[in-house]
Amino acid sequence: MIPMSSRLTQMVQTSLTIKVFAVCFVSVHVPLLVFIVYLAGGNAAKTEPVLLLLLAATIAGTTICLLSLWWMIRPLRQLAHAIKNYRADGTPVRMQVTSKDEIGLLATTVTAMVAETETLMGKLRHQAMTDPLTGLGNRRWLNERAAEEMARAERSGEPLSIIVADLDRFKGINDGHGHETGDRVLVAAGEIVRTCLRPYDLAARIGGEEFCILLPRTTLDEAEAIGERLRTTLAATTIPPLRQGRMTASFGLCAAGIGDRLPDMLLRADFALYEAKRDGRNCIRRARENSSDEAIASAKLAPARTASPANGTHIL
Image (cartoon, rainbow, N blue to C red; front, top):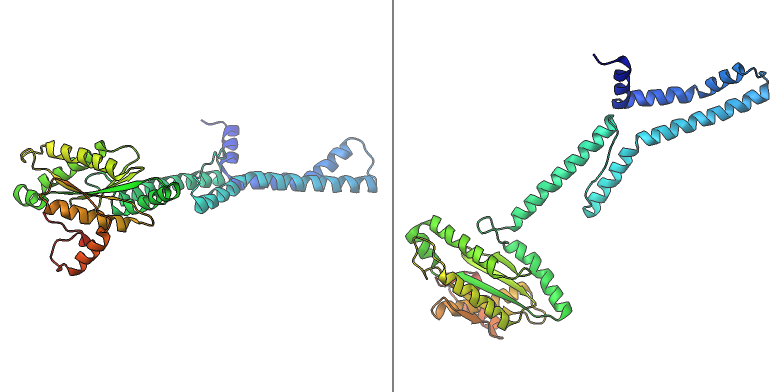
């Protein structure tokens, strides 16, 4: 059985109402307690000394009450400040609350809820920016990161290139061997892309069987070497029941020019990829300097169902 003193202590620790009542009760009665002690000490009850004593005791009791209440609600102010910072700049809510009363419980609960929400939002952001099949980034992620990298390259004057790769005759793999085999081919291609790149390169799956690789601080010659490594690795990989050499890809390369943005580079790289498809597939082609104008003209002249790089559909 819990001793009465322990139960009383637990009640005081866990009840804000009891704490406020105790503080207010003691603070209100400070003048009376001081007056009793004054008289008990054998002092004469003269008017002026008694009034000064009661005034000082009243001020002391009020100060004790205010400081005690300020201390008890301090976690609420800290919590409000932390949430304000979290909403303003995303600073994580971190609080060490030792109080066990209702305010402490509220602060602890809100802190835990914000942490859980932040974790969930992080997972949702990751899912929104990641291709679920290959684990690479998706087009939205690439658009955001490309803007950052291209702005950095423009400021520093460093080269930047992209590679657009499209698996050859992928529709035939799906039609002939089933979508499960097609998915395994995509997963294998994504893994090859990931392992063949440098830590600072950015890779994304931007279409059904199309991948885009952003290469910071990379010239077109260096990009071609990386593309060739990808091409040979893909061609040497076997995904049963496909024969070796069936999993190949065509590549279009493009280097960033002054004032270029990702859509401009994708258009030129897509046009180079279209040439690689037309020239027999499983090869690499560089974008020519005037390929943007050619691609735009091709897109305008091409029928709606004609494969062209402008609408993202390529010769299989």
